[in-house]
Figure (cartoon, rainbow, N blue to C red):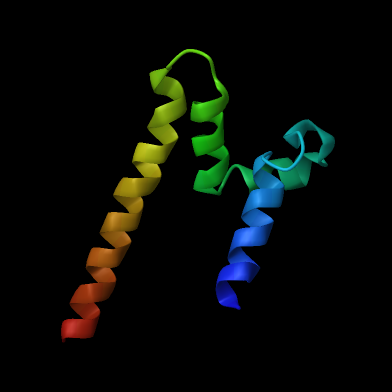
Length: 76
């Protein structure tokens, strides 16, 4: 149930179901938070560009740091 609550908005706000330009600017900004939108942009572009991959790498590094901090708190 929780996965649906997270998955569905991320797909709808990322531009996969319909163009992100159709959304209001506020929803467009929220959609850029989800890694799905950046992954879709990497796959949709005809040429590989590092600038499209960089946000995914930053999100990955942040997720690893947050998980590390949370796991340290659980071990204590």
